[in-house]
Amino acid sequence: MADLCQGAEPRRREALSIGVEMMKKRLLIIGAGGHGRSVAEAVLLQEDYALTAFLDDAANSREHLWDCPIWGTTAMLADCRSRVDAVIVAVGNNALREALHQRVQMEGMTLATVIHPTATVSSRATVGQGSVIMAGAIVGTGAQLGEGVIVNCGAVVDHDCSVEPFGHLGVNASMAGASVLGSGAWMPVGSALAYGVKVPAGHVLRAGEVVDA
Image (cartoon, rainbow, N blue to C red; front, side):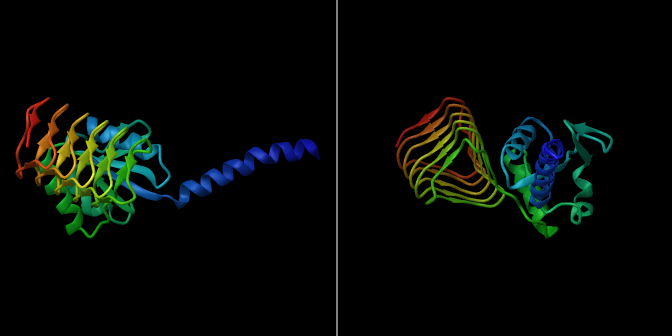
């Protein structure tokens, strides 16, 4: 009897694991490039979503990324509605991300928000749908992130900052308190905004650039 019980325990744990996996929402990632793979790893480290498939305009339907299928290009987005519960657009290009984000909305599909488990996000910050906050990033109290924002690895959005829709902070970019990154603007690696500075919509800083008040 003891041997039977010992054999039953691993089966019980496996069944529980399968049950938890089935409770997760099925997630489709648009984009299988470097950013898409980074977002996928963040998804695999958390408990909210089950990574289901990718769409990528540079791939074909016979390809896989890791153990996950690439169903095809974004032309088949509408066909995915019954196969997934949520979608995240994991494309670094701001204009393209916005266009794909809007297509997802037009299809009536739910946009996911992905936060890496090592990111620190204040409970008093707001994060818009379709946004991604990557490993080691910090989002401070009172910060406001619009739809489709990227806060990349190690980036800092300090207290009361605003990142308008489809803004993008690169690796280790930093926003001091109350600064604003305009819609579709991009802060590349190591760039920084001084306190209260506003970057206009669509503007692209240089890597390492510091914008003073």
